[in-house]
Image (cartoon, rainbow, N blue to C red):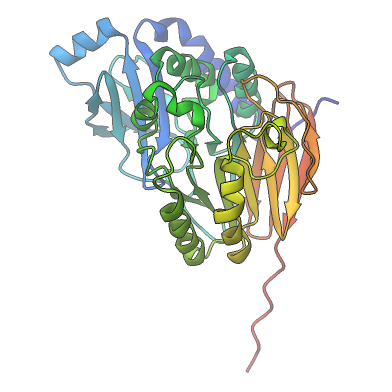
Length: 390
């Protein structure tokens, strides 16, 4: 059954998506990667882009490219850019809380693009964001899911890794950014690294485009009443940080006072996928997560774990922690073979999960690219007891 979103900003999101799509023809002659905002390790937000080679020569040899920030159509800041191998980025003067009516324009654009409001950390606030994973290989599928994300009035896009199939191929990054442009140009991307990003030395491109080094790709993204702890689970590609990262996670979780704690990474610890069957599990990242990280989930009150890798949509529960494995946004569909007492829902579907969090409750609703709601998780926090009167 096709859904109708209950969110009041749906029509606004659709109009933005239509406007951006209409700009593509003019855009492609200027940009190899059209501008997009990204969280740089949870510390701030940068907007990055890459010109076509002929355009880069024009701006590189002459005037420097800049980024203008506008509020209600009036410029209030002009930011310089850094440049790495043709890729440019400008760090915003604020990490969150810029409110509505803010847009941006980079040198070479004749229009400005809206920047969706991103709430600052607030235990009494609220936030909405979307979670996808495994966007490699299928740009047409990714475009369809991007359109579904645009129908949801979220503040950000949380990505569970395997952004591209071969991390060292620049052309695949170009295809990803193109497929996500309808929503990626206005919402902040918060990314975890996947194993495919390591292929052919692609962790360097991940670092360039996501603003964080692969080894250091663990951080806390704080927004509204939620702390999201993003970690690197690619231990088969680089195990140098496996134990030190687990120690960091324990400290970060212990220090968190957010009403909701979410951990996001690529390799799910639980699945019915063939990759978790003892006869076919050639890599053991999921075992490492269970052994070294899951005890911290339980000990420090993690509410929800968001991951991917197995290319199945799945949901499960163990020891007070809920698990959601995103279906492949672009990759080939997974195969079910293993048994799991933890997993209660396992579907061969391409999905996006929309998270809506407030102090008293969190909803995670999962949709297909066709707009069908196929699963929902709703969590509640008990109300704080009233203060005793003297």
